[in-house]
Image (cartoon, rainbow, N blue to C red; front, side, top):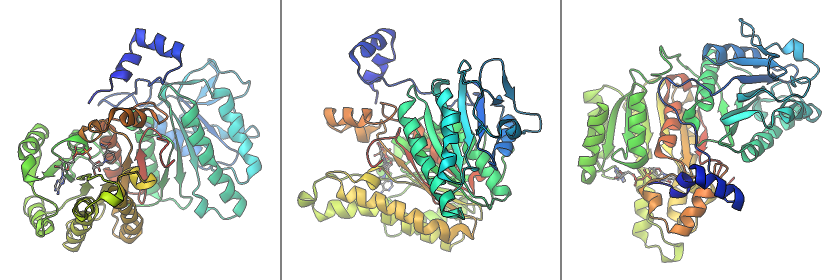
Length: 479
Ligand code: NAD
């Protein structure tokens, strides 16, 4: 469904009125189209003294086609990254990588800061020195990314403290910069392998691009894993067999389309009652359709048989199918409770168990589940739904370490307010509040959830596991 207020505000007349009245001002977000440049302008790359990631990041961003600047960040004197990808940390030593001179005339598509060198709280001043002069230099729908070390993997307590502090900076920038600018913190393990580097590249390509339009204020962890560099970053799922449940409409249909666009062979599943819509989606993307009610006792076996017969495996399982049956707890009958828990959580467990037992998910496989911010924040009238969606997060927490040895990653996305039939049914006033109560002042689109699932599904993202990534425009709920 459409957000008429946002369309009005983004028109010339609407803009003027909204500014005068001080009303919410939802910006037009930059969304990905195949062939788009990574960013609308250059990247300003800074590093704290002793940072370990600035040089490799300069190299990978340059390889991704970004115009990487280090140095002052002012027009005419920003240094391009050296051909070897060196971020020029030496020239910045002593000022925390801060642009000298304090000028802000240059405009950047992204600010990327390697904070891994910050080892105690006094070093946090380097963040101020870098970001303060650049607070107004980021282009609309630009990106701010801070790179750190996971606090749990820091030796000294002071280093862990300083690294944990980074989260406050990025979450606040996400709320402050406006105009569709998003901000994220990416923690990268210090014990990285080749897979770490590939997954860091995949993560930065996702976060900097228009694919991450509605993702802000998130913390992503990059560990180790058998990540594979794609032959073509515009088709990062080439050759992958992907199952998408609940694919007949809404978010699931968008997931099927995005994953097919990215090169996957998609098996689209939904209930028999949605057969026509499902067939239309499958035909459109050159995939296949499976009509199956996931709650049926024989559903896991029938699905496993189908995947084994047709494809011999399934590289990526996207557990998207979900239902709501809202009532406050005192008014909720047991059927509503049971139905929601069964579709949203227990059926995922049963299917995972059978596919894993039968070895149909190979090394390098992916499980991506759809949770919800209701599973993080809770929601009045949704005890059943929130329980099921919090359970999905529990499933990620439990399965990610358990399956790491088999090279299978497990992650979830937690959508906030997404414009679908589900949210169209919400009463107007509550719907408007849901739409505006986030840093981007608008609801997300199904494609925003789909792009995030796509990134987690890429072979290049193997070292990203155990994450729950909110696709909520940095909603205030549960933040
Ligand atoms: P939707 O109702 O439009 O689509 C859900 C799909 O799942 C439907 O096609 C439905 O037929 C299918 N499905 C339901 N039960 C099934 C079963 N037993 N077997 C097979 N298929 C079944 O919903 P949506 O808005 O696209 O939501 C997709 C997912 O995203 C859900 O898990 C939902 O909880 C989650 N989510 C949505 C939002 C939002 O704002 N729309 C927010 C947070 C989370």
